[in-house]
Amino acid sequence: MQPPVDIQLVGSFLAIRWGDGREDVFPGEYLRECSPSAENMGEKDILGNTYGGDGPRQFPGVGVVGFHPVGNYALSLIFSDGHSSGIYSWSYLRDLGDSLPKAS
Image: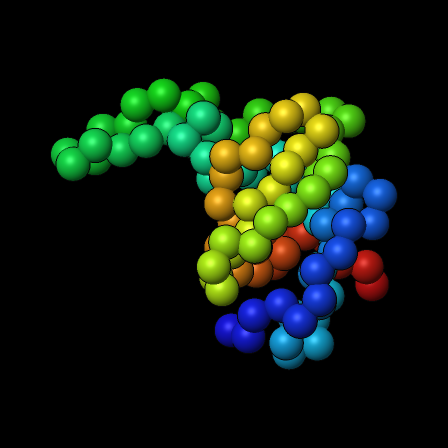
């Protein structure tokens, strides 16, 4: 998988153009629901038990208001509800893009 070549905010959406030419436009609500943060998904201990997090929920009206690169492998997103602790790796974003409805 090639990393993104362009990342932009378009209103409350995050638009990514990948190195292979594919483009994904993510609604902020969707990205917030899928946040990989411990707050959202919980944390696992060494035995595989999950603590905290209540899984994906719906976040109506929440948008992406900013982002920061994390090394050369991920983004940290900032949402309009103040959430900013999830780290979205390129591969995670690509997988999320695979599940977006595509225009025909």
